[in-house]
Figure 1 (cartoon, rainbow, N blue to C red):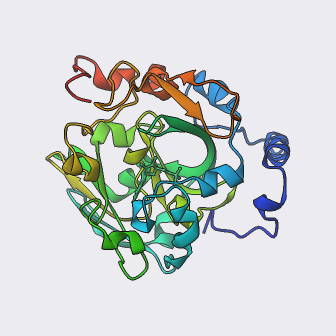
Figure 2: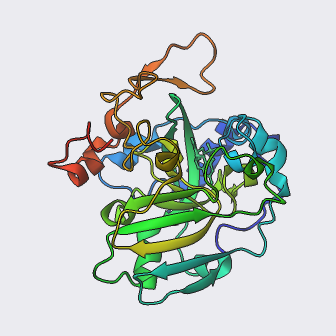
Length: 301
Ligand code: MTE
């Protein structure tokens, strides 16, 4: 049940920044390192990112199953039942099966990772996610030779998800990663924010976070993962292949057909704050560029 405790303190009641600083000191005092598990200088760099407030992170969302407006998920996602929850893991794995959320969490090391979420619509947020490395779960179920991709699927329960009555996307929402991307230590399965269980609008009880890719790759409320030999379909690519490729790495040099991807607006920075330049791979170039060596990123966007 790691990461699913309910704290008597609500984050909405406090100044997130001050409590975050507090927590950081507590963690340091307890011998735990903020960002432990991050690689090299990245731990320092990401630890220095100032997180957005709980308010921003939980009220400005994309979760089309609850509507296409930014405030729709916060308004409607409470209708989603998240207990009990299970994830079916199948395809090219040694131990396929339906795992309860508790089984998935059992023995996992949940840690805080502060990552930038950069949406394709050119806004960004800094989120203190709590989660574990996807690689740990994949190693546990045993990836078989021949598996080259991981396909992910979101819950589809129309009676609880008013947005799925509209054919905005092919439901259920699906996403995919190449196996080496999925195994990368920056790729996490997130189960909470600011030490609290994941709010429904952010993808409770468990969602993917791939910090060097546009936000839509970070699929929410996952119920199925399939190891495959072939590249799986992804919702946004199926909806509009010209605008959304399989890789969707944050890349300021490749424009979206309808807008520039070179700068971003930081949510919560205030109306007078200017846009900031978007960094290659969302600032994680040192860690992930080698995954794409020799690939033409204007073709594989
Ligand atoms: N997952 C599902 N199932 N449905 C969605 O509509 N939206 C994606 C991604 N995951 C989406 C999803 C997009 S476009 C973004 S930017 C992020 O979730 C937003 O995550 P956040 O609301 O936690 O900031």
